Length: 349
Image (cartoon, rainbow, N blue to C red; front, side, top):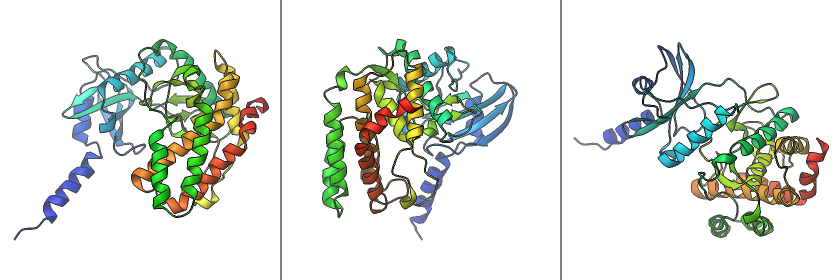
């Protein structure tokens, strides 16, 4: 008697197992390093489940082992990311330094998988307070300046500015879903793109983080303990990194709360603190054109991120379009209507 249940169950089990690091896998990879005696292994549930992690404790210290997600297993990009981390670590910048194998490589290979091992950094999540917002801005400016020697080697990538594929997706989604939410997002993005486009090629560039949000920083009391997840590092106008950071660090939402309870307005004190922190530390402070581009880039960053998620997955996190689109429209509209407040906010902090 035959059944399809067995092979399908086996496939699911393999997928579930592949989303975790087995003790044997960890021991095999750790053996590629000079770390001393292995004391304990604990799964570490954070970030994407496509890149499983574990905390590894040895008699020489604690480390974070990460199996790299298939989409990130581009060796040239990984090597540049590790070059960035090592460069920052040597300069005394707070990052989780990548460890080298016995063969002096920062990338370990086992079967079809690639791994990285970094020093464990103690810290806590960003707490949406002005001092930590300012520390985040200062850390970004310091990072941009320190990475200047790597600009010629940095990859260029398609960021969130002037994304024609997103504009096309919004047209399709406007036809598929009732109401005018997608058309309103498309209109706001169109205006934002057009205001930035004439300046984009002449804006000062830097090796940017590319994904500067609270989940990618570990905080100390009033300082940044470590900047992590630099896999999106590339060469772009520095203000694109800053605008995304301003968007992410100035809006405090309670985890698990319903969308209709989320604030629409940015906290201008947090926003101004981050912006003033950047200006205080940057070797060359932001100029008027860069400052003028910030609100439009914030609109682009949010519009692109939400549109891509909704188009690819049909939801944003666990929320369906009808749940989240009114909030997205209101948030983008608030940014558009408060451009001067956003630009002037740093003078208050």
